Image (tube, rainbow, N blue to C red; front, side, top):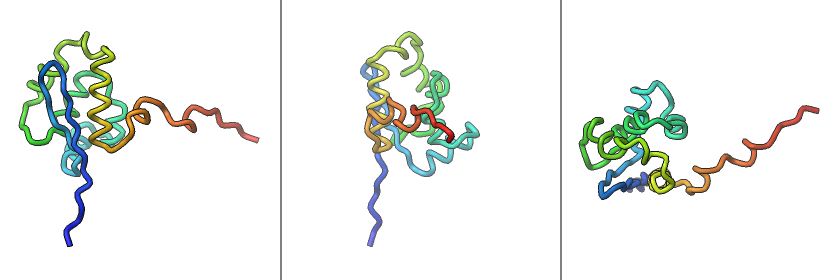
Length: 119
């Protein structure tokens, strides 16, 4: 009996261009190898256009864009990176890829925001 594939694919669409991303084991390992960080940790903390281009480069699925092509297409206009529409498109893509609710990506969990007291 074949195992069920549970890998999600997210599609990032910006300015009439798109790229599919997938969190396959090989893609995550390549991202970890290049960055020296756990891939999931990197996904959660990447916040510079160059880091995001690296992430898109390693997670792309069904395409073979270069890192420079990805950067130019999606991150070349730095002013757009901070637009709410860009952030929304990014959150939708990542949540679809990881199978995580978008709100969990955007908000820290309750226990992370609570002060812990020592008795």
